[in-house]
Amino acid sequence: MLVEAEDVSVSIGGRAVLDGETVRCAPGTMTALVGPSGSGKTTLLHCLGLLLPVDRGRIVVGGDDVTGYGAGARRRFWRDHAAFVLQDYGIMDEESVAFNVTMRSGLFGRRVTGDLERLAAVLEQTGLGGRQEEAASHLSGGEKQRLALARAIYKQAGVVFVDEPTASLDAVNRRKVIDLFAGFAADGRTVIVSTHDAEMIEACGSRYEIGSARAVAA
Ligand SMILES: Nc1ncnc2c1ncn2[C@@H]1O[C@H](COP(=O)(O)OP(=O)(O)OP(=O)(O)O)[C@@H](O)[C@H]1O
Image 1 (cartoon, protein in one colour):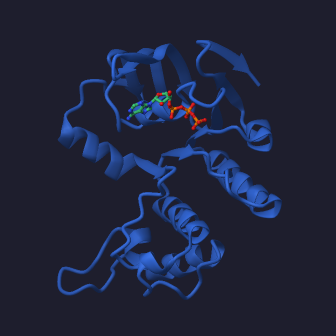
Image 2: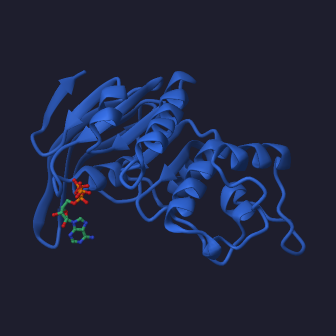
């Protein structure tokens, strides 16, 4: 699914945070949003993911102008097409590891439904094997980050929005995470990454320098 921002501007508290940004994030590619701290990478990622409205310009997904989507249409987009790995991880502390990955519980009680075999495999892959019953509040910061990754892997969404996924990782785990997202793109998905990480940027098929309104083909 092609995800585009066309001439997008956003002001927060009267200050221009994005000024005429245009990016084109193609399926089958990892697209990097790069630039100095405070240049607006996270803000643009949130606009592309319909988490934040734009003041000017358009967000276009799969050829459809989605800029004016209301709450219901945005929720359907998130449910059917999007996975997010954001800086606050979006973990529900009071819920179990399993619920945080599958986002599904049984109609009665707290039994988690979904593809439990797949859940176990994904937790194994992210180093959280056997911990599905635990409350997410028991996890460390790094484990919560891996839980957010597990959710994105489990969901198999068409568009994956990722904010600084390697910021707090050691070299070995950084490589694993880069390979994981590169694998998503190789599967034909659209992967959009806000990052400072030179190794991650290197792995991206295209990159945009945010703040300069200038596209740089990789
Ligand atoms: N909710 C908010 N309220 C006030 N200012 C905000 C808000 N969100 C973002 N900003 C401001 O917008 C600018 C861009 O922020 P953003 O987080 O998009 O930058 P970034 O390029 O992702 O930075 P970093 O690399 O440090 O994560 C910053 O100056 C920030 O202070």
